[in-house]
Length: 75
Image (cartoon, helix red, strand yellow):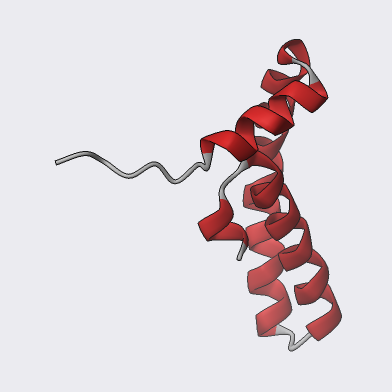
């Protein structure tokens, strides 16, 4: 049985080609650094019933996931 990748490789390769191989590591690290804060903002927005804050944090997560090819997370 093969494990299914959560990353769409053609999308990731296109992103890597557009951004450059040297820069992609920095972008991945920024994603790992920023995402926990965005998830916290999502939780806070739900607790405070702040639809706009929720929309902004969700949009940031979605667009970054889609850029990296994590299409299942960004849909």
